[in-house]
Length: 106
Image 1 (cartoon, rainbow, N blue to C red):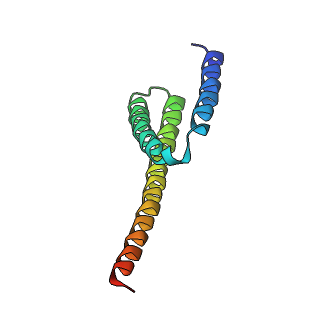
Image 2: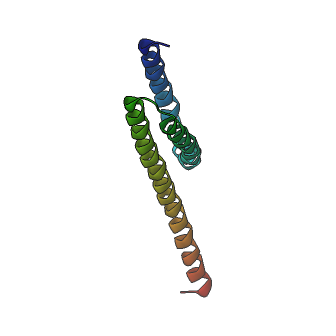
Image 3: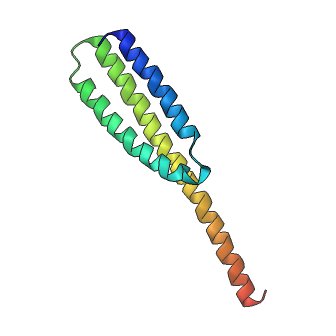
């Protein structure tokens, strides 16, 4: 494939990805983020494989940049997912404490 074909595929993938993610309701963001983390893990493994088999210095540089960016994306996704899950956990714990106070008559 030539460079123009690859650029066209990349631009179309960005548009399709944006449209798909923008249509997701807020209640499905946590499961979507977990699925995206799994995909980013696969991307990280692929970038490591490409970096290990790189013969040209510029291919190695791009592959190492891909490894760094995929790692940052993967870690960031897990951090966001963890924070979102803690928000739901805190809300549930607050509701449990209020129910216990009502049961005690306080």
